[in-house]
Amino acid sequence: MIKCPTTTLLATFAVLIAFANTSSAATLDVINHSFETSTFTAWVKGGGLTSSGSFDPTTSDGFYTGTPTGMDGTRLAYQLRGSLVPAGYFEQTLAGADGIVSNGDDPTLAANTEYTITVGIGYRNGTRADSDGPEDFAGFVIELFADTTVVGSSTRLASAGPLGNSGEITDHSFSFTTSASPTGLGDALKIRIGRETGGDPLYLDFDNVRISAANAVPEPSSLLIASVLGLGMLLLGRRRRKNV
Image 1 (cartoon, rainbow, N blue to C red):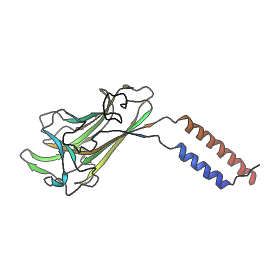
Image 2 (tube, rainbow, N blue to C red):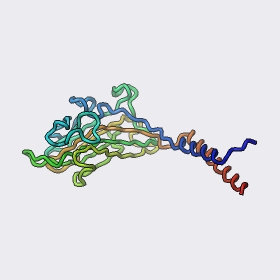
Image 3 (tube, rainbow, N blue to C red):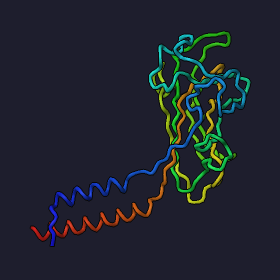
């Protein structure tokens, strides 16, 4: 019989554990994810926006000092509104690798899947007084839709203040897991970034929109590895008792 040193067995089990815990997360394509085109390619604007667009923060009116920490690319998107109109938003229906919506390979809502959405949120240096008053952080709502159904969302109230430091871009992430039979199963995915309501006027700067999807149910191969691991640990325990 071939004898296997205890250290070798432990090393093998460690490799099996690492393999079993490997996530099968896939990054979903977000077109123009950092808003580098002035035409907002692939994004649709909606709601009540007094002003919106993208800008180079290095040439803005003191909003940021140089290139903000955490920025992706060379431009930031922004939303601004007055107090008497509904909050606005930008949204995008996700396309497949070809970048064309409704072309057969678009991502759709899947069962037993963990979705993670990350957006870089910008915080301007203090406030800027203009004809409408001080320009303050608006707060935000980030939502994932399956067609017209909201399947996941995260809200940051304006009253809670910024997430990060003034003059920087700070990532905000949230995750949620679908059930075995979620509402909207198989429907097209759409991401929406909107401003929180209240105040006059309020701004929201954002950048670098990302979304990933990972299988939340262990695959058969992972279950097999876990079973082999458990058997191996049992045999190792018996071997140790025999050597005592």
